Image 1 (cartoon, rainbow, N blue to C red):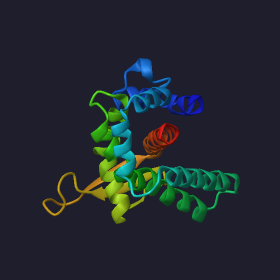
Image 2 (image 1 turned 45 degrees about the horizontal axis):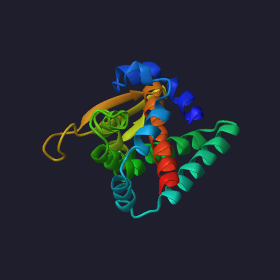
Image 3 (image 1 turned 90 degrees about the vertical axis):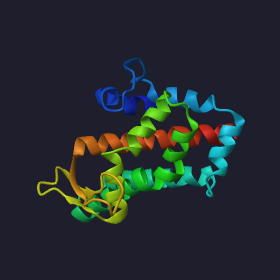
Length: 195
């Protein structure tokens, strides 16, 4: 977990200010989440595993395949079609693929004041929620200067109000993606060792 601790600690200020992670956990958040997952009861672990029609080992394989693709593309000379493929794939994996299969389950399972729950709430609430919906429904585009993305989503219940325009800059989007991937890796790897 040290590698993930180091990787996510680069986002220390955002973890503290946006996700409300206490400062004393921000340098070892992945390890702390691992400890929280390990402290779940066998029934809680079984519920997470059984709530998923796809075995956790295949979830890990998908994340590893995704990372391998990103590493391969990052070694290539940047080309617009490659970068756009990375953007679409990374946003799908981080926000659509993991939402129902992991973040919703963890939010229901973990104690409300746990670090894991705080991270999942952040990833399930606006503006990340709105961004996820825009990705799932194709309501997004690059900003003119490619410094981030513009997207459209309902703040609340669809069809009861019009969509609002949102923007996310590349730095914030990179943070959201890093947090999402860290939660997924820590949870899936920890559960795969327990079960």
